[in-house]
Length: 124
Image (cartoon, rainbow, N blue to C red; front, top):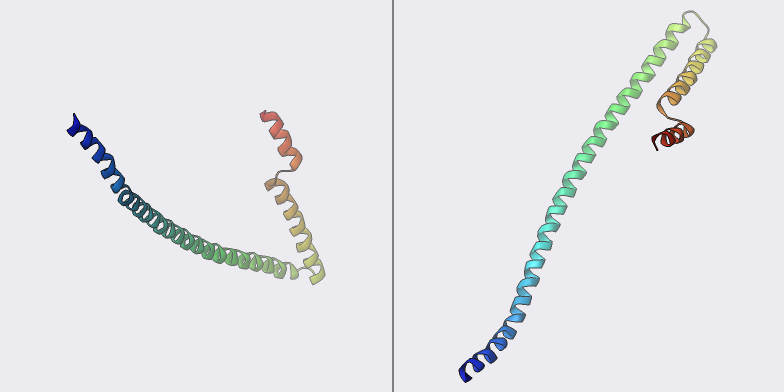
């Protein structure tokens, strides 16, 4: 029985000697995992930022084109009406029409706070 007791006594000492090496391996594995995750995150962020910048450029171009089209249409209406009316009447008519159209679109597209509160109550 004495040989078994000596073997058991040597085994914990051997495990104690391996603990620092194991800790170093765990830390190096953890560092590699963190570095890989950082590279992955960086590549995802760069791709997302590039896609966002591309969409912003496209949206800006479309907004400028649409605004130019609206201005051209309004100018053509003004010049067409000017054949039959003086400038002050034409500009007044276009201004009143624009304000009325904006108000109609606002009421149609943006729900009022009381209407949204009523719809929440009916859903409950």
